Length: 133
Image 1: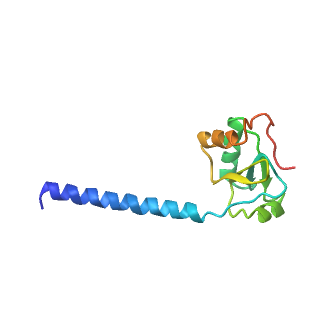
Image 2 (image 1 turned 180 degrees about the horizontal axis):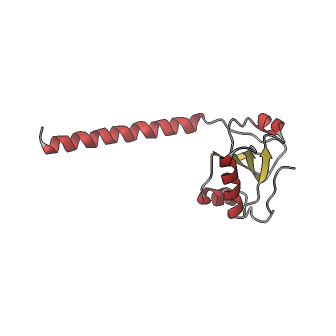
Image 3 (image 1 turned 90 degrees about the vertical axis):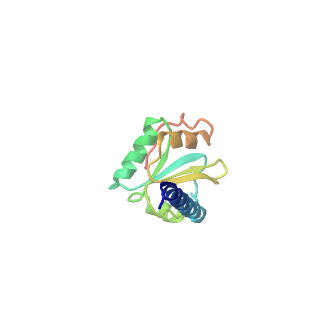
């Protein structure tokens, strides 16, 4: 086989791999369940658990960017997590003024994503840092 043929085969395989991965990512996004947060409006809600290291990292990400959150902890408010349909923690949800879900993310957000979530609510930084009661 010539060098050109080998390179062409490698390029074709890479393109196919990229297409398969992008299709898998897009189908996952399409099937992601939309979380609804009852009785909370105009807030970034962070669903956590007390024994979750990723939850601590997610909490720190919001705190380091100065973004006010409403933290809902499984051990303290299990009914809220069940009612919202949260399947894993940490999960961050941006709830608009009318109670509609504007954005959601499972896992630890990047600083850029935290700022983007805050921007969805206007400034989002002035309310301070709140945790579960």
